Length: 316
Image 1 (cartoon, one colour):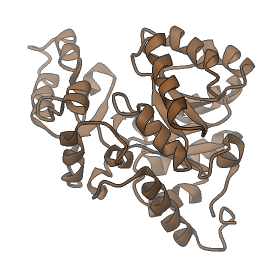
Image 2: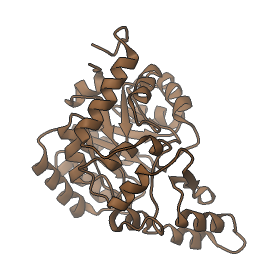
Image 3: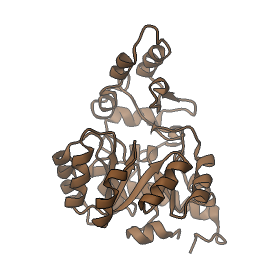
């Protein structure tokens, strides 16, 4: 069985995190992943403190296993939710869209293991100096907000740059990719797109169906003009957005920003995948069926163990 410092230190069965996907990663999905042996994550996204507290309490009712919270640092409620995770006794916090430095001291004092998502070696080093337990090196193959470097290029460079554990993310949908991440020096993986079609994921069926029908070239990156590139599946919405994005003489940055407001919720919660934004990674075409979180995790690690083989130092 693959066992590393990640599952050992976090008291989980497998060294796998479920991505903290906005409008997706709720108590239902997080608890299911945790019950299946991974680390489920609730997405704080733009929730205020009390909204997040309610979701945490719901998750506690659904699992007695460890779970964490993903905090988007650009949220206007970041200060509130930073306190709520302490008050609710959350032991693992992952962060994205910014630098968690202003919260690190109080999180560490509360015994929270902080694991930021990083797109570069520079930010990974900075997080290590701040006291991060580990970092998640996420390549541009992932869905949602993406950086420039691919997982294959980013992970080994981050591994070489820091002395804390590195978790790989971006472009992971089967055991071969899990095994590849370990061979690159990672000691855990974070998976997002494959969990979108988990039975316990509560997003609209239309969203799941679009993932299941995706082809290998069906993702596109939008938002580069605004400095916040996002990977999603091609749709009527992305075509209209792309036209606007490359027509700066007619569409202002403010108007372009407005085009992105609420579109993820529209797809994920209302099922409007034509006018909404379906976030997904480049491995969407590899996701071929709906299944329970337990089966997803077992499939990933059973195949990874076969690939790595008995000689691998990770297989015990």
